[in-house]
Each structure stands twice: as C-alpha cells, then as structure tokens.
Amino acid sequence: MLVLWLVAVGRHFGIDYLSERQGAPAGLGSSTIVLYLAVTLGIQRYLTQQRAARVRSQV
Image (tube, rainbow, N blue to C red; front, side, top):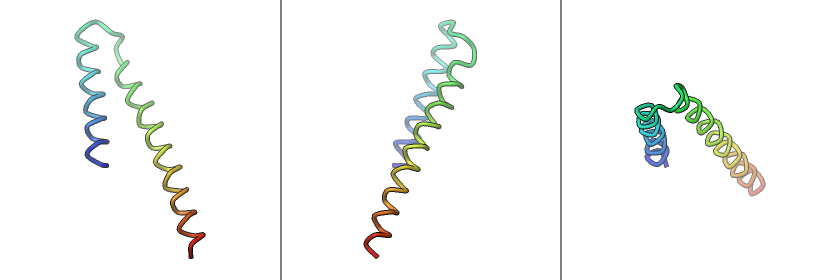
C-alpha cells in the first residue's frame, strides 16, 4: 500500500512539473497535492478506526 501511495504522490509531482511547463498557474500542483494528502489521510484514518472498532468488538 505504501508503494501505491508513493506512486500517486510522484504522479502529482509529475503533473505539477508538466503543468508548469505549459503555463498553468504557479502553485497549482502544490495545492492539489495538499488536497490529495488531506483526502487520502482522512480516508485512511476512517478505515483504520473502523477496523479497530471491529477488533474491539471481537475481544
């Protein structure tokens, strides 16, 4: 799972590099990576909490 996360972050940096070369607004890639990280980490947190709740209920 860590490898997929690293690939996704690398992809965002690649998109940032390509968009800046084509004249996109500066900082567009940085803002999208922050949004991506916020959503990804939020989903990971939610899933981890759900998993912990299932484990607690089985004990």
